[in-house]
Amino acid sequence: MKMTVSQAMVECLKAEEIKVVYGYPGAAICPFYDALLDAEKDIKHVLVRHEANGGHAASGYARISGKPAVCIATSGPGAVNLITAIATAYADSIPIVCITGQVNTDQIGSDVFQEADVTGAAEPFVKHSYLLKDPADVARVFKEAFYIAGSGRPGPVLIDVPMDVQKMTVDFKYPKTCEIRSYKPTGKGNALQVKRVTEALRSAEKPLICIGGGVFASNAQAEVVALSEKLNIPVITTMMGISVLSDDNPLFVGMIGTHGTKIANYAVNACDTLFLVGARVGDRAVKTPLALEKTTKILHIDIDPAEIGKNIGADIPLVGDAKLVLQQMLAYIDKHPDGTADHTAWLGQIAEKRTPVKFEKPVKGTVNPKEFLQKLAERMPANVNICADVGQNQIWTSRYYFKRGGRFLTSGGMGTMGYSLPCAIGARMADESRPTIAICGDGGFQMNMMELATAVQYGVDVKVIVFTNTRLGMVRELQTKGYNDRQIAVFLDGSPDFVKLAAAYGIPAVRVKDSKSADKAIEMLAEEKGMLLCEVVVDKDFPTL
Image (cartoon, rainbow, N blue to C red; front, side):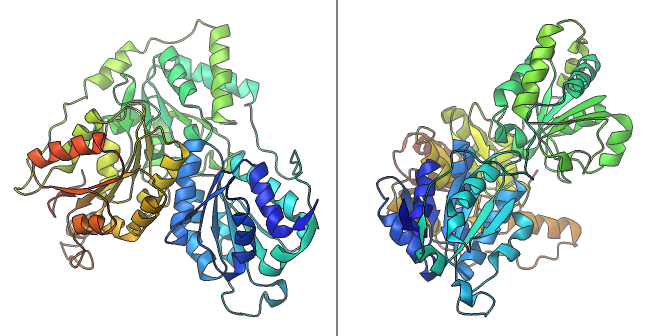
């Protein structure tokens, strides 16, 4: 069928069953936007207020839907603004397809208005990228882009399309399948390695399962829970693995790492066998991997062979999709029911280290954010999406929002401030049955507060919590502890009144300064229909841990 490349691009999105796209138009992408207008009944376009936030919104959508999501930007500054979101998605293995406009093909390399080599600039942060110069390649490129983004280890794929190419005519037919000779991601694990990993885990006296974001990427949550319960093995998580197990599961120990719980870090150091599932074990998770290698047998599943042994050596490596490999392990255990060690004593050893949570009394006129989050978790429904920003608020949320069947979404690998609100918008649009809360500090919120307009414009019901301490809290804490309290560039004086700001957008808002107002606000967050902004006043010196 004859059509323009722009129309073909829209047909590609339809074929991939894309229902929502996030973007910001400009001259170089206008032909595509013109074609998109004719498809508005099939594809909803959401105008974000900054290109990076389009990428973050697509990230939130992809994480909840489990499929690649789409963001769009124009050439030059539009495309370059998108790179932060691309890098964020790359670090956390989130499948997004980024479509950018480019100057005309005969102008590329001439430094014309709004030209930027975005494929070159984004190269370190994409799983793959395309500069689409031949109109005949449009169907193949889009099919490959979605396949690469969503298969194997997920990640962002960039398609850069010159403006003149968008206007060209092509005989369009979308392929049903995709075969890339040099790209064959592994699915099932090697049967011998599956047996070795399973037997090593079963025979261990003090085994520990550590799960990361790869469990969500492969939709292996149920398999992880089944394996831990079948073998009676405790589970810890990296930050990206939070919410696979609910905090009230007796086998869940907590989050490890620099900002993890004492009991989880104790379990890592005390175990004799550590089973890593979809976790790359970065520096914030394990500070001394070499020391751990000497005392602990390491079993590691990952779909990306480059991750196995990169940060910590593996005694038994196993390449494969976490869901498929865990299913193989469970099937093996069912066929060979005998041979699992008794882990009762090990679980008791860990249980002895559990201590009740005690909350510090807050300074008058402020609220303890940890206690606020725990009370909020007790009141909210079980299937809530919690989208945390970066900084102290992220650590408070990861440690004190006790999850019961919800999803915890944050920027783990890149640590991108300003992620939470656009991520929440995307997450909520992906599944409107799940209540969604964006949690941020007053620093991070001022990097994305313009997206309140996006949520209002498209009727996206998200709740926003802003912890206000008039500081870049985590940096302030770093300067206090590591630089003799020489504080510089961490003061947020001049910030707006967030309650009045919300009112300017027509959003109801409440300010929390004490336990009475906290209880009222939590009730509103749980019951209010539509958007709500809740500002929680925190002492400027309140600690992260």
